[in-house]
Length: 174
Ligand SMILES: [Zn+2]
Image (cartoon, rainbow, N blue to C red):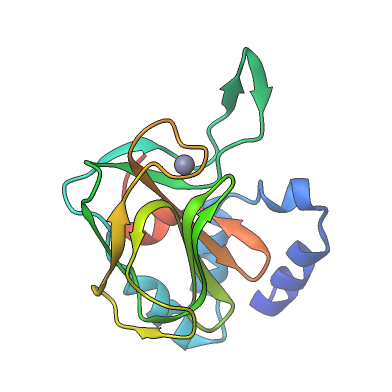
């Protein structure tokens, strides 16, 4: 299957199934990607928080008041409140909100080629919507804003509407 056919197929899946497309599938898409720039982008990601503890992984089931809830689609980096957060990749800020109900201080970056990243529960946001950011730039600090159980950064990775495991591009072994 060609990469763009597979993408089309994924976009047609219901939301619930789309999210369960495994990372390995994403890798094989990349391997066959017609757009070589996409592979280049993906390889360049850097870890957003140095010396953090991975406190939550992609796909893990959440339990709230004894009831199973939606799975977790992010990768959590636990670190002290105020720890610097760096941009994983060059990109443009498309959303910068200081205090959303669930996700607290939230940033979304557009990286082109359908790739976007999200940063959640941030204490401080040091960039503005529309700003062009370089990889490694400090974009804010770790917090526990929104519905967070402790100080951590939750990062998410999307390829168009498809949620992907950030650990696959950050070379983090779960
Ligand atoms: Zn999380």
